[in-house]
Structures are given as C-alpha cells and as structure tokens.
Length: 103
Image (cartoon, rainbow, N blue to C red):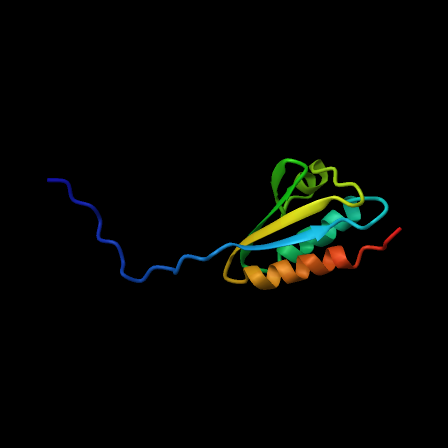
C-alpha cells in the first residue's frame, strides 16, 4: 500500500488572476527607462506579473523580457497578475503606462 504524506489542512486559497489592458502611448514606445519603471513597480508587491504583447508572454520583473516585446506607440499590452497584492501591483503598473507622454 502506498502512503502519501499528510497534507496540511491550512492551504493558501487559490488566487485568481487579475488582468488589465494598457496602451503604450510614449512616442518612443516601450523603451529602457519605462521598462525599468515597470520592473521597480513590480518588485514592490507580492505578486507574479506577466505582460502579453506582440505574441509574447514575458515576466514583468525582467527588463530584457519587456524590451523584447518591442512595443511601439499604440501597442496594447495585457497585464496579468497573481498573488496577494495582484490588484495593487496592476494599478501601480497601469499608472506607469498612464504617465507616458503622448505624441
């Protein structure tokens, strides 16, 4: 008879993913300085954030990953977060994109 370890009855409740859609408005697109602002925003929260754009899914905590999206002005990005502070993280990151200058 196989025995499995007893699992604790105290489990973390499953965290539902939160999603936001943002548009790149900076005339220079999603450049290095803006990527750094996104990464710094992500690091403040207990959440795993991904960015989906131009057919790629990248970790929002990775500057190189964000740059690899090659988002030009007008590109829509989908932000997805999961974790204890997912909603707050998405609000903060959406503000980073909202603060972009327009052409």
